[in-house]
Image (cartoon, rainbow, N blue to C red):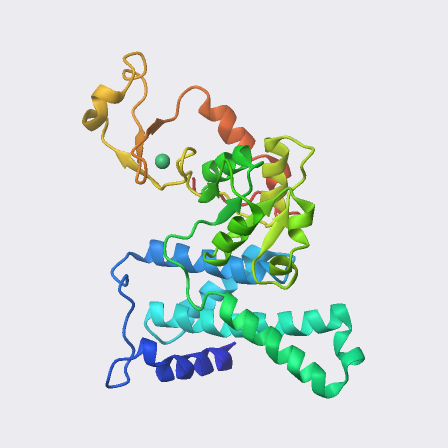
Length: 301
Ligand SMILES: [Zn+2]
């Protein structure tokens, strides 16, 4: 990976969209964002890229990518960009090879035609996979049947977007413009070319079970660690707020005993850990939601 990272930096140096007139790297406009936001954006993008290959321990691979960037002797954001570029190229190459292997098309077509098919596939993937993390992308896009799952994923710390009504074409187009992983209960949707060719990452979620079991399935299958809870209504990040500042919004019977309050950065909704929160926490940390063999995965919520 060290060699690919070096190659990626050279590629970045040559890319006119990322260089100024003297050829030195120009930091992206949002470089003033704090490290946590930067890391979250890249982690989301790495997850989106890697899930196309269905690795067994997805989060371990993401951690490895972050670690490589952390150890690189480069400014952190430049290192992340380099790792992202190198990983994207590897994913594209693997998807091209996988497609050939699964279809056996190259053997049937003959050598010259196979080169054409391979080049076309590569061009489609190059055009479709975002070349950099998409600003404002959620972690997940949930189809119309997965509103309950979206709320639980938000409580577990993931930004999940959900539509009450959206047709398949729009759902796919919207996911193509993001770094989200598509969660769907629709089997035929998984057969669409955009999913089958790896243009978007997707997971088929069981339809016949409840939202809690769907939550367990997604957390376990993607090996997702628990993170700090987000707003269950919209997926926005929650930040602690002084009790006195929101006094008029707190029910009179809650005010005397509850001291920790949180505001959603997106919709402004006020949250506190009421008497029901222990039950929610217990459900969120269900052993059935853990990555197999993971034991007690650390929670930072
Ligand atoms: Zn909100």
